[in-house]
Amino acid sequence: MLMLLWTLTLLGLAAWTLAAWAMHALLRADTAWLGAAGDAAAQAPVAPWLDLWWPGWQDALRLAFELLQAALAWTQAAAPWLVWGVWSVGTLLTLAAAGLASLLILKLRPAGPRTVAV
Image (tube, rainbow, N blue to C red; front, side, top):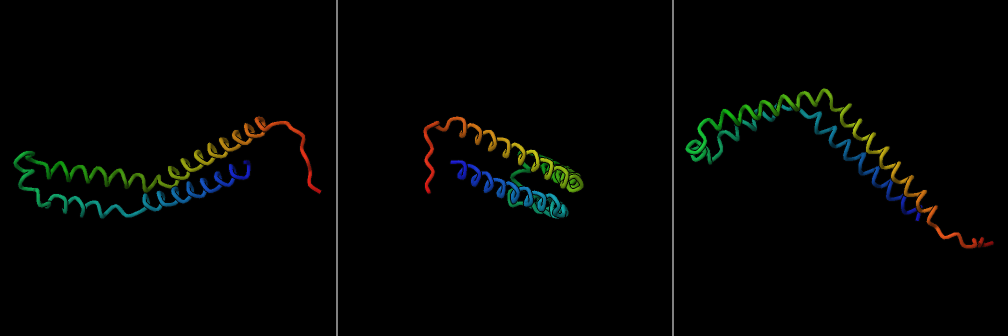
């Protein structure tokens, strides 16, 4: 039972590390594509229909993309600290939970006679 617990814990930590690495790579990506995406979204096929119901939606969309670009630019500077800080807290919590589960398994194991195969 303990072998299964620690094997699953290590597999979970490997997946957690891969997810942290992927998030770090995504946060470090260039944010210039957001400007082009905002312009492309403003030229959407539904633009005339949106103009009828929400005048000025293109300005609001451009502002939203500029704010998103600024937020992502800030996270680029802080990405290593943010991602690896969250990773380390998650890793410590996972290891602590596995350790407590190990102690619980050992405490709840029946105390019958142990036989040793020779």
